[in-house]
Length: 307
Image (cartoon, rainbow, N blue to C red; front, side):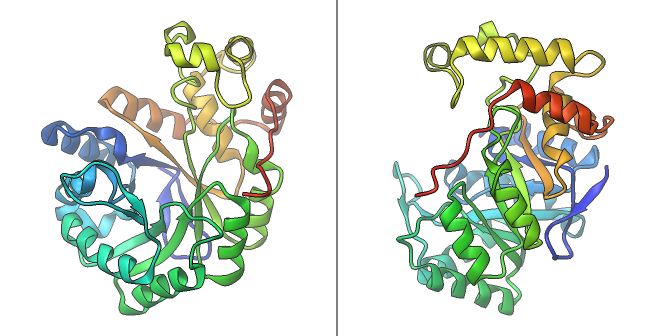
């Protein structure tokens, strides 16, 4: 599978990454899914300490133990939890980050993390202290690079201005085009990559019949779209663009069209989904005309600039 460079780093990641949160809590199945993804050419695994209170990191660690050098491993920090207790609290302090990374390394059975990401963030955080923690971990060789996972424009700008982040993980899809107007061009100008998540918009942008959507989605729609609007958009996408390819292929190739996107992290809870995602990554890229047609069919919302 073709690989793309994350920012100015020397991390080259497969165009499609595996969002490991979706592999579940049954160990045998989870390991099979992760190993299958690696066998099919995915080299980029994304997890977080919070997922299943560290269990997800443990599964990833077991799956990659014999091939660690071949993997680009990303995990996240900032959500403080206690194993066995419900809920978590936000803690982006230097002390917590430098403590939490040790627990992640132990669960992942490795002595370094390729991409360590702050799992959220607000302008009220001690951002300078947070950056200091990541920079020290880099100097110590515990992490190779760091980034943030955020959809907050003002938080993103703070980190771009003050730190050496190489990536921003954010929600991006045909149905959530908020990054396009300002964030993608801004990050591209600063040679910082986007890692896109949510590319199939909770399964809407797959071949799964829309009538099978949850009752909540039927009542509330998705982001700026009422359910009736979703039906119209999906019908148009299928008839205009998903003629000789699947809707999943259209969805993932749309995200990959922008050069700022290094990888699209797609979840998978079955082998079939992994196969579909890999096929989508390896399919023919969309043309500029096809991308424009998609944009004509959909909404170009913008972020709340005060966040």
